[in-house]
Length: 166
Image (tube, rainbow, N blue to C red; front, side, top):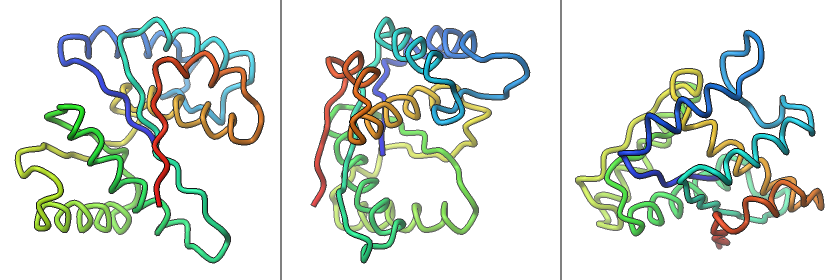
């Protein structure tokens, strides 16, 4: 799971830059849907943007359910963005049931006082928030790096911090 940390004064410029990377009628950028050549172009453009990526990685065996691994990564990621001084987090909306699970995790973290109550967290579909596309590209490049396709991640590595979970 990944986040990109962006200064609020840069958000609009970054949104415009990400929007310019869409091709044709595609409503968004999505790493796994892009041809390899475009992935390299997207990674290159991200290196030129004032962003910093944080990626949480939880290597697990097949006995661990995917949703549990995701929750472990999200918990650590929320902590990391809070430590980075972020005041707002946008999480990509999934299904209502899955978003409810995320909100439950958030509530638990706040009750345990491992996450500040004043951190604003909201859910949005990726088609309506281009900044989510940057996080998708960072995590996609990282995942491919883990699968030994290193080129795009190597471009983004100076702007990305990996955090191993569990």
